[in-house]
Image 1 (spheres, rainbow, N blue to C red):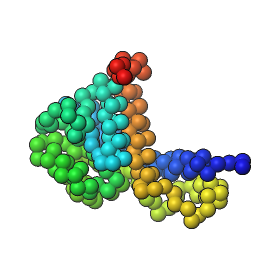
Image 2: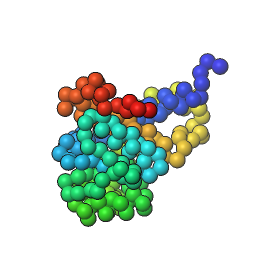
Image 3: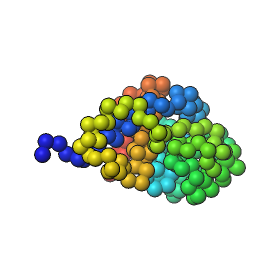
Image 4: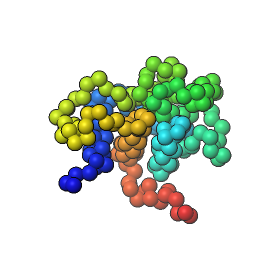
Length: 199
């Protein structure tokens, strides 16, 4: 065997993420960065795999020296006006996440939503929305995927249960951290000194 289907799937996912990045809005991304930099405290939230992305993002924000917390953790303080909550939700409508978002809004927090669906329950109350297109009608560069699809077969499922949204959201979150490092002139060694050292 000269090639492996797992590696082919990785290549296809990378191609999809590149295409998603190409169509994302610069204005939406800049608005999220501004919200993060202006916030007193940052809360992150999501359900399921999106929740894992939210936790990872909060950890990286903490490494940058920002006050970041994960909604639902026992050490998470009360939210106040001037704080933001960054919600990762592909549907923008997961009940538990939407309920908490509405409560945060009532408290005076600002809602930042990373989603695949702008018109949604959380989208309607969000102050800032970044769209990650997990479903596309057209592929920007068909040739980039042709060879992989030949090997895999057109009929095969691309990824299970919305994987591409969460995978793209994770890459997006890490890219936001990289940009924040540039803006704040944070060096890698600055992050290292905040890294866990009692594990």
